[in-house]
Amino acid sequence: MSELPGIVVNGASGRMGQMLIKLVRENPGARLVGALEREGHEWVGADLGAAMGGADLGVTVTDDPLEAMSKAQAVIDFTAPAATVPLAGIAAQARAVHVIGTTGLNEDDLAKLDAAARHATIIRAGNMSFGVNLLTRITRMVSEALDTDFDIEIVEAHHKHKVDAPSGTALMLGEAAAEGRGVRLSDVEDRARDGITGEREEGHIGFSAVRGGDIVGEHDVIFAGPGERLILRHVATDRAIFARGAVKAALWGIGQKPGAYDMMDVLGL
Image (cartoon, rainbow, N blue to C red; front, side, top):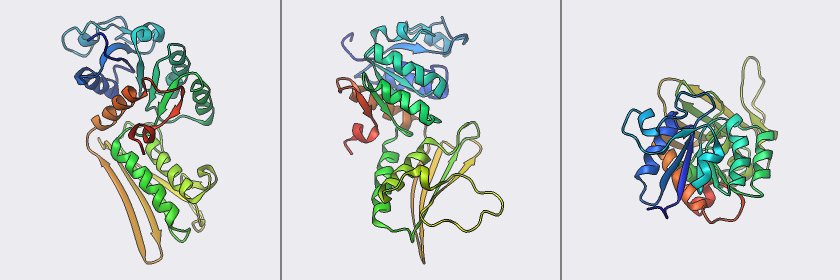
């Protein structure tokens, strides 16, 4: 049992954190060796199992990443940019794979993650589900096949507690569509429309965000052309799909050379 890869979960108290803890513990090829929370959180210092309302697990929640990763080969991180970016440097020091599902990262954040990836294995994706990553590949293929007579719109829906928009998945799909056309997303994206905006600019990629209720995640990529529309869609009904992908990524990353990877690499796409 002690030879199994050790995994740490960052943001242990969150919905995704608790889902990850459950799936790591159920995975016969991994063991949970650490749980991280922010400084001052009420779970810090408590046994993880007791903090989650169950029996003790023998894992103490800590706010010290180096302590948490002392026996780990990987850390899974679905938190916030302010926590994820500094953790990347610490994970690199610990030679631990850093699996990142955090969204809302800006260009400066991404540059820092790229710097950390020179010394460690970082696997980052706006969405860890297998289905979404297949959708991303298909989106690029369709975008490459269709010319700018087909307008591209990405519509996403999430629960009311989501704090960033467009979602990381929507941006991932937008990047794929832009790559298919050989352009930079930042040059052609329309993230919001309000008021008298004028006609839609040819070749641009539009985004729309819906927030409400307990929607887990829905993404449509619409290719709207003269007389026809092609709609590619993914609907998530269980948050566990993201956690399963992240655990798979963590185990895949152990033994890989330092560098920046994504779920396409993990899935062999």
